[in-house]
Length: 151
Image 1 (cartoon, helix red, strand yellow):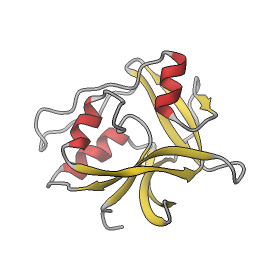
Image 2 (tube, rainbow, N blue to C red):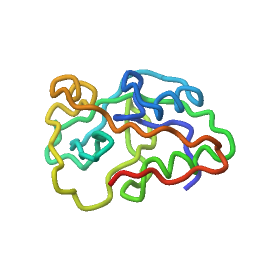
Image 3 (cartoon, helix red, strand yellow):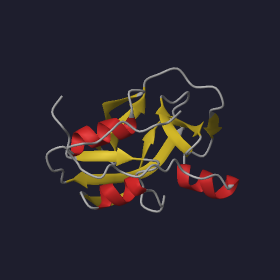
Image 4 (cartoon, rainbow, N blue to C red):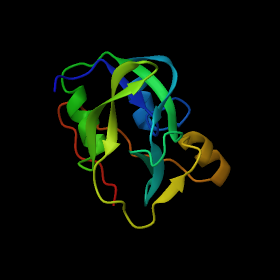
């Protein structure tokens, strides 16, 4: 698959999450507006905070809320983002706001300790529960990025 120009983000990459990953993405993208996609969401705990996972919907009314972003990536940016998302995610084509876009969807077994986010809104869930988002500083150099430690 060629690298997409439009991506749906729904977690630690969202504006308002206060994460280094969001600040990194804001420098390389433009927000196109709020959107939602069919699906359900879980929150996964780590020693560095919580991060969400987008899963298939169990019923047609289930939605995950986030933002559409137009990417302006430089060489090496996709490698960094793929590392950040981790091997548990797959970049998949989905429909949001009436158009085909891409999103990182969960593609692994659901880990122990994961919690459902019934309203499908990660930032709202963080605010309601008082939990903190997964927060790992971005690598110092683009070319020397390292995988993030989520364990």
